[in-house]
Amino acid sequence: MIESFFNYLDIPPQQLWECSLQTLYMLFVSLAISSVIGIVLAVTLVLTNKDGILPNKAVFFVLNTFINMVRSIPFIILMVFIMPLTKFIIGTRIGSTAALVPLVVFIAPYLARLFENSFLEVDRGIIEAAQSMGASVWQVVWHFLLPEAKGSLILSVTTGTIGLLGATAMAGAIGAGGVGDLALTYGYDRMNFPLMLFTVIVLIVFVQLIQSIGNHFAFKTRHRQI
Image (cartoon, rainbow, N blue to C red; front, side, top):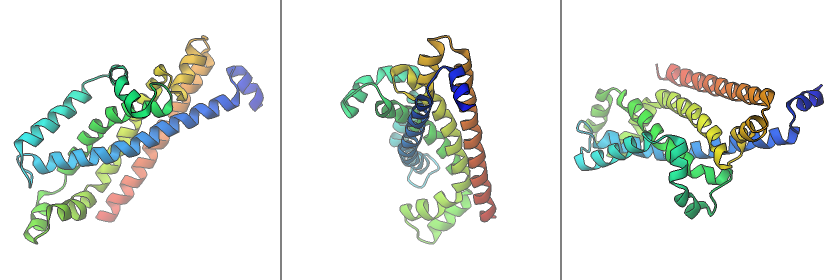
């Protein structure tokens, strides 16, 4: 039955398995790197804004402008635009590893904006109480800001992951592999509609799983904080 199914899709099972692994590799590696960068950017934005504990107009303006500029560029254009940077860092412009560079550049500012909103939701009274107790900036961030925003941060990561999943599919256009490349090379180019439909279903399942897991952990985190 399984063999008949793959014969119907006109693709070997190992090819589907390999493309799925490539998508998961691009998704989670770029997500991990982007989350760290996004947290740093978001914390810097929150600390340096006019109501922050380290207000700095110059730093905030430069960082805020940079994030807005990167977010305004469609991913497919961004991939092509930073190919020289990808070649310099990775040594090649194609492949799943090469796709990590544009994926990180694309999603890190997006996550930074989501994280910034999560941090801004934290009750300002908690931050002021921490400062009145003599907490340093690092202590305020690590022991108060991050824990209080944890539930919202999880939902932000969930939203960013789903956006990143769509970007990994587009990365197939530059030979990055993954489910997107499978749909283009074996589906669209060969006019194989059943395979294209199957890849859409796979992506939908990925999104549903990611959203469900994110909602579950966000709910548990917020329930513990009450």
